[in-house]
Length: 128
Image 1 (cartoon, helix red, strand yellow):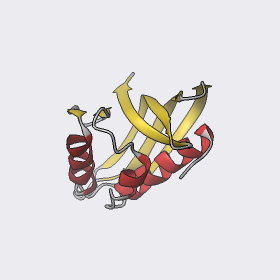
Image 2 (cartoon, one colour; image 1 turned 90 degrees about the vertical axis):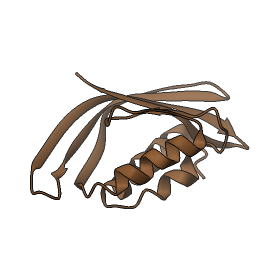
Image 3 (cartoon, helix red, strand yellow; image 1 turned 30 degrees about the horizontal axis):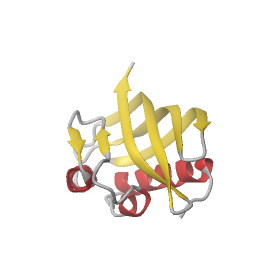
Image 4 (spheres, helix red, strand yellow; image 1 turned 180 degrees about the horizontal axis):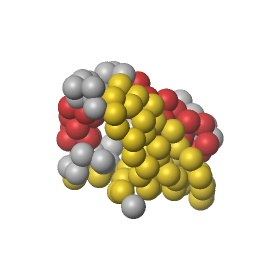
């Protein structure tokens, strides 16, 4: 479990790359187990609660998108118990049908310190 906010962000994007490769399970360990979490992701769904958020990642991982996800222009704000990251997510890859996709998306990820480790509680993306 990450003990620094920057390490938590790195773990989040490593899990995102695993999701693009078809494995959404890595998100389970880095997201809070609390039921107050939420995700407003690139697919447009508004997910609230642990079950809904994890189900969204299961669906996204099954889409068959092969590619990479990188967080550029990272800016962190941190207090003792909460922190957030704003960045530009750059996604490059290919769909199952062979369509090349590139997207630059603004993103905000909010973290909460739980038992000394940073856990994700909210993620929001939108295109500019």
